[in-house]
Image (cartoon, rainbow, N blue to C red; front, side):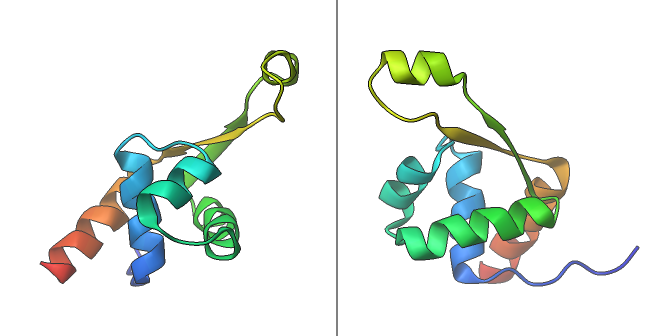
Length: 91
């Protein structure tokens, strides 16, 4: 099995935010203090790496609340392993 790449501070912070219950972009930005220009590309990279998976909420339900549909992220088993490794390295 190849060694996992080290996570940047921003990627580790995003994984930690998702693991702690922040599931969509604006929530993750609020918790981490990172900008949208950092968070959204990182979410796509983390999903491509298999650390996160995403689903879109029902569009009709979101529009009934007067907002666009949200893309919700969850941590995968690989993401949890990468986060634990990053936290162990930092601590």
